[in-house]
Image: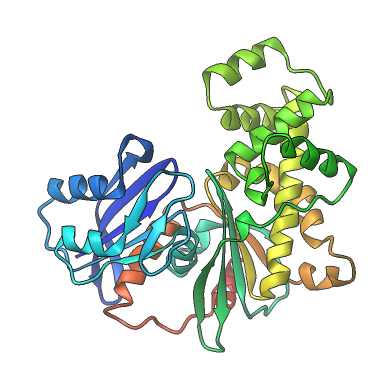
Length: 341
């Protein structure tokens, strides 16, 4: 029995999977609000104690850098240690990987219906791939193509310096530097990032905030309100904020694609993308993605799609645990993607 976890700044999802012939069969799953617990150990102990199942392997994808089996989470006041978790679970070892690395592993477990295509790309595209996911924070990871299969690896590119591309974005950077000593991509590409953009546009007089919207922002999650109102076309200020957010998303996805030479495809994960899919489908994202000067044609040939299965990271953590038992099958995401892109 495999215990897998997707550990985010907002929620923690744990699940048991049974390995059957190299595949995963879900047994039990539960979601916990991360901030209501002092650490991951509490959540894991609670979940395991609820179900008396014979546990053999465990792996957790966590939102933060992992070094020597230990992680100090970026958006939670937690320290997660694989050795401590292994001791609590009575296992020899426990896998602890970055959540975007888990997402990358999970891609191989998804079906064609779990993707929405933004760019078809070259017909027989292959090579390295990349994944970028905006949610509570901004995660990025790569999949190295070794000639036979893709090998996921983590990075912390979401915390690289934000790079504005025009005068308006330069103003945004100056605005955010009044709040933060340093402005990373996560400050503009995340749930809080969308709200930062909205506040910048409002505070610099780009458009007026109606009274009814002020009330909604005060009573509900601002990110959700801004996105929903923008998609409904009910407020120019929200529409401008979402437009800028999506343009920045496309630009940074293109940056990541260049750095990883992601000719095999670029995947857009995270909780925000599926909720704004109609906006992602228009030209805003892809125009920013491909606007790389002399390398525009290289970006245009890269397949780009949105992952709409929210369980990708959870499945990926389970697969990573499974791979300690069964070697991974040789997979080419680009070939699989021939049916997807």
